Length: 154
Image 1 (spheres, rainbow, N blue to C red):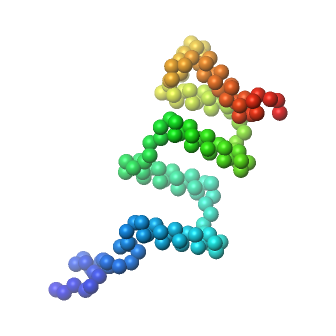
Image 2: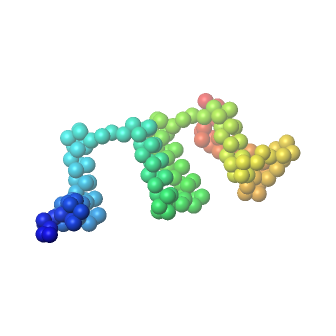
Image 3: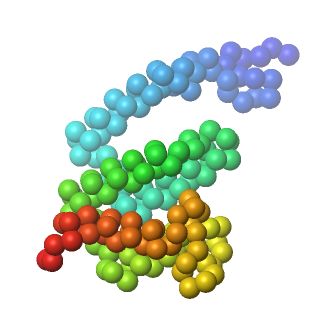
C-alpha cells in the first residue's frame, strides 16, 4: 500500500506545513499581529466583564488541573488587589462599600481565615494571624478611614 504525501496510515491529514506545525513562539507572533490588525480595523472582539470573568475562571481551572497555575504569595495577592483597586478607582468603576457591606466582608474574611469556624467568646478570640479580634477591628477601621480620605467626613 502506498501512502499519499501528507496523510497518515489512518487516512487523516498530517501535513508538515502550516500554522499548526510552527513552533509556539512563531504562532504567538503571528496571532499577535492578527489581534493588532483586528483592533486597528475595529473588528476585534471586546469582552464584556462577564465574558472576561468566565474566560479567566476557565483558564484558572485548567491551569490548576494541569498544575501550571501560579500560586500567589500573600504579598503578591495584596499587591495585585491594591493595583486592581487603584485602577478601578481611577476608571471610576470601583465599588464603594457601605459600612454594613464592609463589616460583612470583614466578618467573612475573618471566618475564612479561621477555617470557617465562628469565633467564641463575644469577639475576644484570636485571628488566624494570632491577632486579637479587637486589634483586627482597629486595623479594619483604620483601613476604612484611609480608603475614604483619612476619616474626613464627606
